[in-house]
Image 1 (cartoon, rainbow, N blue to C red):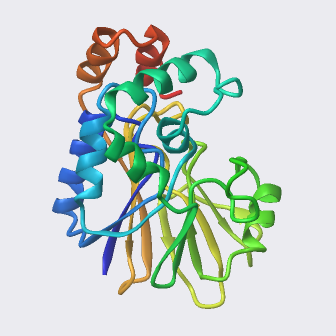
Image 2: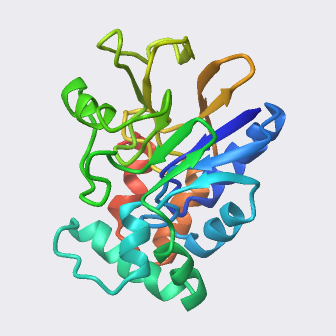
Length: 241
C-alpha cells in the first residue's frame, strides 16, 4: 500500500491540487489526512470537499477545524488567524461544519496512528518541536509509525535512536524502531521553504519519503486579498513561514 500523507492544508486549493496531482503520479492508493483542512487561506469549502471525497484511510481533526466548526472564543488565536476563522465559519455550510466537528482527535490506519497535535494530550493542541516533546507523545504511541502535524514543519523522531531525523527526506522503517513523523504543511509551510510539503509511505517497501512541490503561490495570495483576509496571510506564503 502507498499512502499519501497530507497535513495542514489550510484552505489552500492551489497547493492541495498540486500535491494530489503529484500523489497520483507517485501511485498513491489511499490518503491519511492529519488535520487542519481549513483556516488562513481562501478556499475552505472546496478543500474540505476534495479531501472528504478522497480514498481516505484515516483523517483527524485539527485545531482550526475545531474552531471553524464551533462558535468558540478565539482569544487564544493571533488576530490574523482569528479573523480567518471567523471568515471561514461564514463560508462553510452547517453540514460541512458538522463534518469537521465530528472528526476524531486520533485515528488508526492499519498499523499507523494519526494525530494532529500530540498523543499524550491530543485536545490541548501542543506542539512537537524537539525530542522532549516527542518523547512524551511516543510514550502513548502503540504503533510503529505515527503521523502528526500542527507545527507546519517536517520533522521525524526515532525513539530507539533518540535522534531527530529528516535531513535526507527518506526514512527506512526498520523492525524494532518507533517513528513519529510530521509531513509538514501542504498549505502554509513554516520552515522557510514555501513549497508545499507532504509525505508518502510505501508499506510494502517500508519507506517513508518527504516531498516538496512548487505551486501557484501568487494565485493563492490573490484570493486571500480579494476575500478581505489579512494581507499578512498572503505575504507569509512567499516566505515559507
